[in-house]
Length: 71
Image (cartoon, rainbow, N blue to C red; front, side):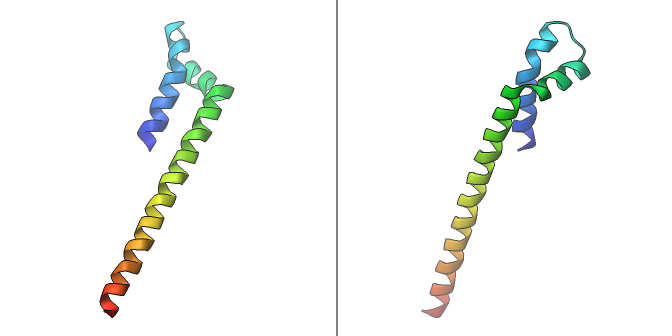
């Protein structure tokens, strides 16, 4: 997940860097952009959805495993 967050930040920094701004300034400006914050929130929602699927899968596997033991 950190890679995706870094890629997202780099995507939003690109325009500032191409305008010859320093990396630190480009990062600060990119982090304050509304579009970056929206994209970051979308990324967090994707992570939550993925974690829910993993949790459901593990729960299902555990319940199947306990049924096999009972049989």
